[in-house]
Structures are given as structure tokens and as C-alpha cells.
Amino acid sequence: MREKIIKKFSRYLISLIVIMIIWQIASGVIGAPLILPNPARVFKTIVDSVFKLEFWKNFCFTSFRVVVSFFICMIAGFFLGFLCSSSKALKDLFELPISVIRSTPVVAFILIAFFWFRSDTVPIFVSVLMTLPVMVSAVQQGFSQNEKNEKLIFMAKSYNLSFRQTFRYIKLPCAMPFIASGAESTFGLCWKVVAAGEVLCTPKYGAGTMMAHSQIVLQTDEVIAVTIVLVAVSFVIQQIFKVINERCFRK
Image 1 (cartoon, one colour):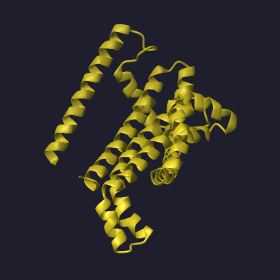
Image 2 (cartoon, helix red, strand yellow):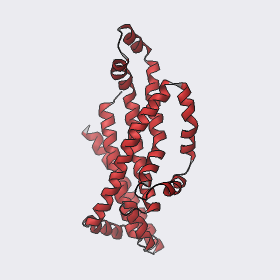
Image 3 (tube, rainbow, N blue to C red):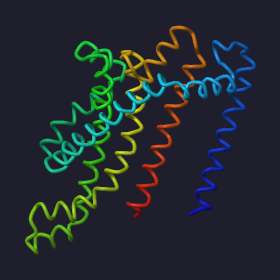
């Protein structure tokens, strides 16, 4: 296990070094910090930012929106996914709206939602809307696996297990690997959508708001610095999700 972790970490490190080298070369060739600042300048901006209270205040608001939208999506996605897996009529009913949401650019939803909600609520609404199809699909696929466990379902009926008992001890455990995988994908998508919503709607506080303000005053290094922090946090959390999934739901 330790060797596997070291090997994976080494690959990540090599990949990061290659990216930094390419970035440094590209920055030197372009020769314009406004277009592409070098890695050292961006790293200095990150270090300076993390010691500012304003930075963490904005970042905490973004994190809060991500967590809220994630849990709303989990609850709504689980409920709708279970219903769709239980009824073909409901599956057909929700198929078109879900397909429309998947096909529509996130920017379109952000701009439309801006007419309906306050700027600090738009990122949450759009994040839930864009991630819901992912969660619904994962839950639906998970509960559909119960059809392959006909022997277990038949055994439950033979022993007169209630719906609650059948759901708890047979259906839910079979669906959990799919639900966990859907949660992992959903959380990563939440970060992207919330950040995009903040950039366009510029609420009072938010990492996306910092990026938008930095872009207006042509501080490219700050835009990239905030982006790197967002990506790093999202990556770490997704890796935690992966470890949990691998340890809890190994097949």
C-alpha cells in the first residue's frame, strides 16, 4: 500500500515538474507578465495571499457555497435517482429535462439565474442544477444493479422482509459504490460551477469574485494564483473521496 502511494505521488510530482518547466519556458518566450507571468511570480502571489484575512474570507464563502450545493444535490439526486430506478414512467418523465440540463452551457444558466436570484445565491442554484444529472444518473444506475441480485431479492421476499429492511440491507449496499462514485464527480463539478458563477455574478465575497476583480485591474498573477488554490483544494478533496471509495467499496 505504501509503495503504491509513493509511486502515485512520484508520478504526480513528475507531472507537476513538467508543467512548471513548460510554463516557465512559455512565460520566457512570451516575455509579457500581463499575458503569462512566470511561476515564481505566481507562487509569491499565493504566499502573500494566504497571509491575508480577506483571502480566507473569500475562500470560506466559496467553500460554503460548494458544500451547500453539494449536499442539496446529494439529497435531491438520491431521491430522484431512486424514484427513476423504481418507475419507468418517472424515468421517462425526467429524461428530457435532465438531457436539456446536460446539453445547456453552464454560462447560460448563470446568466438566466442572475435575473431570478441574488448574486450570492446564483452560484449555489446553478451548481445544484448542473450537478444534479450526474448524481441522478449514478443513483439510478446503482439501484438498477438490484435487478442483477434477483436471488437476494427473492430471499428477502421469502423471509417476508419489509420494504425498509430490503432497502437497508440489500438495495442500498448494492447501490453504494455507484453513489460514492457519483458523489466524487459531483463534488469536483461543484467547485467549477460555483467558481464560474462567482466570476460572472461577482457576489460580495467569493474566490470567483477575487478572480473577476483581479482580471479587471489586469493582475494576471492573482487570477492564476486563486485558480491554482481552487484547483489544489478540489484535487485534494477528490483524492480523499477516492481513498474512501477504494477502502469502503472495493469489489
